[in-house]
Structure formats: structure tokens, C-alpha cells
Length: 460
Image (tube, rainbow, N blue to C red):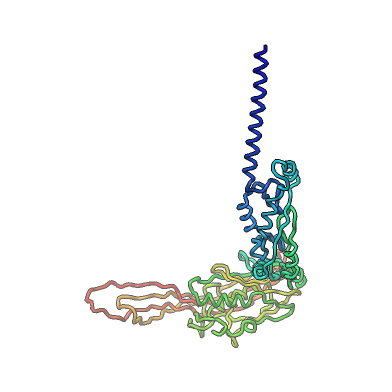
């Protein structure tokens, strides 16, 4: 019994000794671990510094960022030093490290426990570098300054789409500097709602609607050859000039008056044109495809066409009777806005498609264009010498028929015919078939079989 009591006493001493050794080991480990670290519970704004070494804290302070907020939830984060905010790192590290060390270890344990519960926040000490701030403000201006965007119609997926207006903004620099001088302290991230002057657009969807401009009224598309660079350039330039042109109720539109002469000074280039019934090269080639596309959009909008001329030859992008040629000072395309609301011409290029339409109030009527062939003229054959080809070579350039066509416009309302009117009788000369035979001789006496190439018709 006595031996049992001795054994029991020895176990108690063993456990006590083990507990003391464990406690001392943990205490020493704690003291060694935090010898070069911040105590737990220390924060700088939303950044937890507890357990971080002095080197880690220094790196955090070096790369600390601030977030700026603009319109529509736009956020932009930038390092403090890039906006001219220079943190006093030495002072911050000393204050943070000394936090909880007012009493020597281990008498500071209660203080440390209280710190961890309350999450002690450090005050951000900094000064402003005006030179760096000026550079940083330019970065912010490039990010948050924006011009207002007017409500506008544009071509999207071969249709007229209304894009709503957007407000613009401009940074109020002096107010922002005051905010930078008084950064938010506490447990929140460094954050500034950028003081902005709101810039309002001049044109709104409401102001367009007040003019009757609410949706697509009519449109027409034509295709062009994507490899004809100069011609495509001219089409794009003319379409850009026409785009967004507004026509008031009762106003007459003249394409020549709006476009002016297609000169090289305006950026137009040489491309094929039809002149006196022949295809030749001229400045501004391709403009007739623009006038043709606009003419068809005007027909489908049931506008009053005042002047229109057909080509002397057919063109590949519309059937005979649907074209409209223009020549500055000689031939024009004119029509009148016979609606009670404004019209806006919307034009654009999508791939190899030219789109032109009218924004306005949706038409109640439906317009149909009918073409009747009154005569067809077979293409003549024209023979030409081809000095660049050998005698056994030849080319045949395809032609096309000529026509006399009668064009009718039929207007329907609620699926019932409202009106029917003949709008033009047009005659087109045929494109001749051209047979070009080579004239160049060869020194070789070897007999060579005849070689003939068939080429597509030349078109404007």
C-alpha cells in the first residue's frame, strides 16, 4: 500500500514536470517565433499583419494599393507610390512591431489576447510626392475621364440598331487631392470614390424620339467585290459621308449637294466608271453603287423620288431598273421627305456588303418593286487584236444582254394594295462579247494548239 502511494506521487510529479516543460517549450517557441514578427490581431486597413515578419511587412507596405471607383461600378487599383502616396515605412514598422510589447514577455500575454480579440488597426502614416502625384493623376484621368456618347443609330448585323446615350465624366482634380490627403483609416480597404463632373450627351434617345427617329424604317444592301481596293475605298468614304445625315419633314435631299464632287483632294481614288456607255477609269468610281443602294432604300421607304437616272449599261449589284447613276453637275439623285417626322440616313459596311437605310418611325405600309422586261438585246461580238498574246492564244471576255424594263412600285397597307405606279422605263445597252486574238509571233516552229481563256465581263 505504501509502495502504491509512492508510485502515485511519482506520477503526479512526472505529469507536472512534463506540463512545465511543455509550457516552457511553447513559451520559448512563441518568444522565438515573434522575435522578428508582428503579434496577431494587428491590421493596416483590411490587411492582416499579424504573424508577418518585418521583411514581409516591408514588402506589403511597398506594394500597398488603393482602389478608385468611377461611373457604372468601374474600379481601378494602383500602387500607392504611383499616385504619389509615400508611406513612412520605418515609422509604420516600429509602431506595428511595438504594439503588444509595452510590457516584457510573458507579462504581455493578456494584452496580446485583448489585441487579437479587438483587431488593433494601425494608423497609415504617409506624405505626398507632388511630382509622382501629378503623373498618377494623369493615369487616373486617362482611366476615368470620358466624353459623353450621343444616342445614335448604327449598322449591326445588317440592320439599323439604336445605341443609347452614355454620360461622360471628368475628374475634379482639386477635390481628389483633398481626398488623397485624408485617406480613410480603419478596417476598410483603401478606397476613394473619384469626385467627377458628369458630362451629359447632347443627343438622347428621347430627343431622337421627339423627332420621330425611333427605329429602322427601310433599308437596302448591295454586294461589292472585296478585291477591288480603290473602288471599295471610295464606297466606304461615300458611305461615311452619308451616315447620320438628317432630313427634316418636307425637305428635299440631293446626293450631289451632300457629297459634292468626288475629287482626289477629298480622298477619292481611281476606279472603273461608266462614261458615255463605256467602262473607263475615273476618280470616285463606286459612288454609283452608293447612290443605287440609297435609291432603293428611298423606294422602300415610299419617299417621293424627284430625280433619278439609270446607267447606259447594266450593273452587277442590282437588277436592271433598280440602279441610280450620279455625276456631279450633270446627274443627281433627289428625293423628298414626305413624312411628318425626321429621317436619318444610316449607312455602313459589313464585310463586302454596303448597307444604307433610313431611321424614322416604322412604316405601316409595305413597298414592293416589280420589274417587267419589255425587250432584251443580245450582246454584239467585238474583235480586238491582243499584241501581248501569242498567235495561238485568245481571250473571250463575256458580255451581257441589254434591256428595256418597266419598273412599278406597289404599296400595300394591311396586306391590301393601296397604290400601284409605274416609276420608270429604262433602257440599257448590252455589254459586248470581246474576242481578243493574239498577234505576237514565236521563233519556234513547233505547232501549238489553240488556247482560249474565258474571262468574266468587265463591270464598274
